[in-house]
Image 1: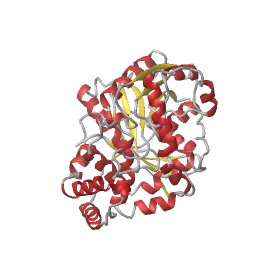
Image 2: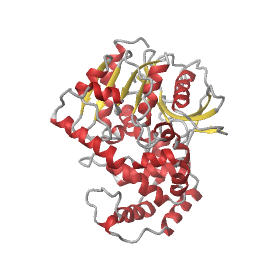
Image 3: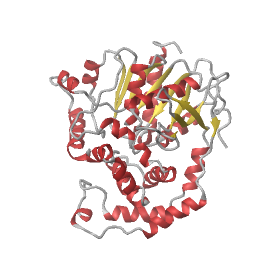
Length: 407
């Protein structure tokens, strides 16, 4: 049962959201366990048994342990019940390319007339589940009568529980951004704030750069353009920021091959990984391990839940579109989205991230920077790894935005 009151839709909205519950059939769970049980894990080799720093990827021992845990100790139903405890909806959105998007989103709606609408957007290998710890904190802290925000957490287009109906062509970042903006308008929000990390970064930037309804944006990941890199080349950074830059540079040199595989050969990698859950677990599990802070790592149970969601929604092959938009040419720079340098911008910096934006760089690049916070612990999955810090940042940023924007 959804949390009472938080699922009450705003009155008089133009869209027609339909309440939704995600329930995996028992046969699908049994089938996944059967595939995992009968899968052959590769024989020992030097590379999969002598890699204390994970430079070669996941180890054979890790995969064997994760497989055993997945089959015998992991409780999908407990996770599923938790996810369904929040108000979930589906809604149809038609974009300007005449394609129909059946979008999923979870939400906490406020009864306050001055509540700020905020959309939180994930990326790969994440999902809307990244924000569940934040939702837990919000429902513990507020009631529908006191919640200062309308919190919208979608499965971004073609990820997880969101998919296009009879797609005619590849999905692009502009169309996906349009779908997210249209979702907010369908919920009756004429003004809103966008938050994003990973693919959500590019969506949030595009939404704030293109659409009047998006009044401010907050990111926890940012990739500099070549022009911006030149702009900040002579700006000094702290020792901690230097370490973050080194982490990002190492990812670019030795950790980004997966992105070019996704972007250049999406069919091959998707078919290979969707053939067996252990294949998907190895490919995705590597990223959850490497991109999170090892001082406060994600639990195996969390990693298994995230991968299970991809498996049960059969969404890996659909989610490849974002890499086609970003990494379809090996060695080419990421295409810069139409970012706003006028609307209020906030940034949260976590040390174990695949790209770095030191404070003084952010101040030099963004005249619209109104909030910046550096953290000592945390990685790529900020809302999932450090939900208390992430939510604190968002609340501080939104308090600033409220003094600058009328909602």
